Each structure stands twice: as structure tokens, then as C-alpha cells.
Image (cartoon, rainbow, N blue to C red):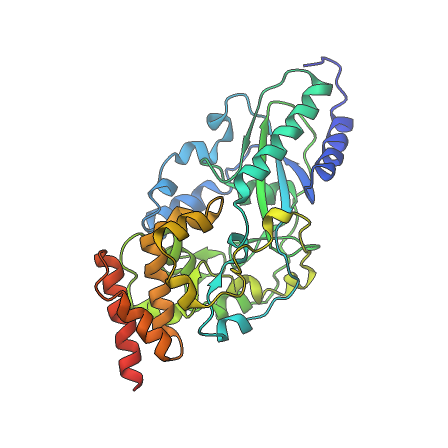
Length: 353
């Protein structure tokens, strides 16, 4: 590392490079997360993490970034917008025979793209600073990314626990570059949720214990993505047509009137996942599922949970010959998990007749 490096100037240059690399914002924070540690601890103690055992592990590393990557002094948080539309409406949830896939998962998986850009950023920094200590993270290690981004000034953690930016809303990914460079830190953003409770009120499963506190075990994103077992019956009707994730609390957020569309082609919807019929998706073979979710965040739930989720949505759909026929064709599926949810879905249609 160059001994007489101008760190304030380097910070300015880093942010300019960030723009060149396709990030919408870079900001810098220190590593003091003492404010957030007890909040995480209480959340875990209340079992709000459910089956996400990884959230209960490595608590010290989450709350002390220098333990995750020794020598870390500063963390550069990076924001990359991913929405391909500025339309924020709950209307897609009323199209009961269509599938709703969370907006972030409709295109290619963001992890590799953002990690590559962060590596390119590190290379540029090294060109000026010389060899330095760093490590890039993109939702792949025990990192409190929203807390770090909030400290850096990218936004504030809203009542729906999402990070919200005054100029861009909340449709964006985050990535971090841990570094041992003593860069100047940016000013933290204040909270701008005010008295608004739209996100809390719209939640289909009433997953918010109170503002800023989410019981993940009730959240549709958790139920459709993280949970690998049977979906509790009490939540199935509330899931509606949501087969992978849920965006309701973002769709109603007033700050998302400032949504910016992405310029990244990788984030554009693939395989018509922004307007797909439930029956068509349910009829994908496992080979088709694997082929069409290659490079997608959806791949991680596996084919069995994919069918489980769609079976629930089909149970909530408007009754039709095609839907009932598709469900009956899977009534004897080899997976007990799929059979259970198909049986529930068929019962919903029988009850409407």
C-alpha cells in the first residue's frame, strides 16, 4: 500500500469507478455494528429465523466484520438496481391463474455478476493503492448487508425490514467489498418511513410482529424459498399465486414511486416468468426445470419445492378443467411432499363446486 495515499481522493475515485462498472451507488461505512447485534440476537432467540439455521450461526462474525475477514477497517457497500419495470401494483396477484415470481428472481442470478464487478473494482483500487487486503461478498457469507448499507448512507432499513433509498426505492441488490484501507466514511441516512404502515398492513400472512420486526416463519418468501417441508395449511390460501417469493410490502411502499429500471440485460425476465401460466409451469419436467432455471435464483429450491409451491397456487386459482386435470395428473407423484400439496389443491376445487 502506498504510504502517502490520499484516501479522501481515493474514495471519490472508487465511487466513480463504481458508476463505470454499472453500480448505481457506492458508499463507505466503518465496522461498528454494536447497534445491530442485540437486534439480531433477539430475533434468533424468538425463533423468527425458522429453518434458516445459518442465520443462527457465526453471530460474532456477522456482528464483527473484522472477524470474518481479518484486517478489515472499512466496508464499501454497492447498490445495483434490478427492476425491469417501474410499475408497482398488486394487480398481478389478482390474476389467479398466473404465477407470481418475486421480481428479483425473474432473470439470471445476481451473485456472480455483482461479485465479478466488485472484483473489477478491487483491481482498479489495487492499480492506485498497490496490494491491499480485501474480500468481496454478495449474500454469500455471514454479513449484515442491510445494516452495513444503512450505516454507509445508501438508505435506511424500513418498517418492512427492506433497505429503502430516497432516490430509488427498494428494488436493488447489495454487495460488499471489505477492505483494510482507512477510507473516509459516509454519513448515515435518517429514517423516512414516517407514520406510513402500508407494508405492515398489506402482508398476506401478517408476518410483521411490529415495525422493523419480521417473523420469517410467516413470510411467503420464507415459505416458498427457505422452507423445504410442508407449507403450513394456515398460510396456503394467503399465498395466492405467489410461487417464489413475495413483493407485496415493496409494491405498496410509497418510496418505490422512484423505482429505476435496470440497464443490466441479465436481470430481464426469462422464460416469461413475469407473465407465466401456472399450469404451464406445473407441467415442466424436472429436466425442463433444471434447464430453464440454470443460472437462476429459483434453482436453489429444487424441483420438488417448485411443484409444491405451484400446487398451492393452483389450489388458489380459478377452477377450470385444465387446472383440475393438471393436478389430478400429479396426484400420484413420487414425492410425498408434492402429493400432499396436490391433494390439498384438489380439495379446494372440490369445495367450490
